[in-house]
Length: 429
Image 1 (cartoon, rainbow, N blue to C red):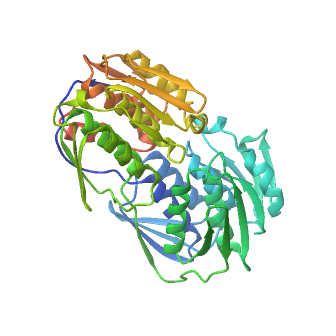
Image 2 (cartoon, rainbow, N blue to C red):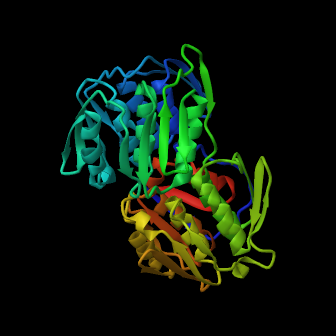
């Protein structure tokens, strides 16, 4: 599928998409809960659907009462299949693999697309310490495991992704019979661990956060046999693209984003404010527009995205319209995403006339000289597709995003939502 975006002035009111970070963690907690969980505002992205499939393969039963609610029943990890497939979800593979290892049954962990190329040797290093048998494909998928996991005091490397820690926290909390501590060196993306701990607390688990240097999991009596209701948050990761669209292409009102959320990508507000866009933040809605003197008045900014690397694509779209050179830190976090996002952003935005320089851990975006419509490619990366589409809203001429369906991974309604904001977006096979 191709998406054609014409230069547009957007306006309107929109509700932010559902957070897959929140949704997938809720699925994990529901699987571990001994009883019934009601999930309100469930997500429907490909990553969300992968998480739902995984928990069913691990023994959960799901019923849909309506489009706004899921009911999940579970009674421990009781695999009904010898294999789980995580699709292209990095969070699912890293979170559910330790959870699956709570079972004594042998299980093969697999995935598709870019996930097959992502390094997973973390499990090769850590699992033997937890009495888990593990065989990987030279540190990549497929991975064959056999538990059950035995929680022990361990030290792990948190520099590649906090998602490995998230999986261990869930698994340890379920299995711990005495206090056990996970020590973490060089933990990245700490706000995502805040979200994990928030979900775990909601489900009755007790974890002590020792300044993000170690985490002590205490034996707990999670709420058993009592239905738990969890409402999935609005998504700051997807919402960031809409906020940037408003900053460069017209006044919009975005609802459904919690300004007090623990989601890392809430930090997009800092960059937008620094750029000089017009913004009003309230508890239930955010109003955003270009500067009163026009989009050409946007200012370059300096932003550290080490703990929120998913913000690189929308921030590049914003920086392309800022009058000067924007500096974004944290490029090293981009190598093992759906694409090598540093290089991909550089190459695709060059087609639209934007120069991006990569230097060590820095990305420098030279903006303010205008963008031209072009034929660009999603590179099978949902965030690249959305970044190019947003940037195209004020380009000169039409832009075509090839293989635009990549957005289904996280935000399947993205193009429809742009259309609701009166953007000139059309889709073709």
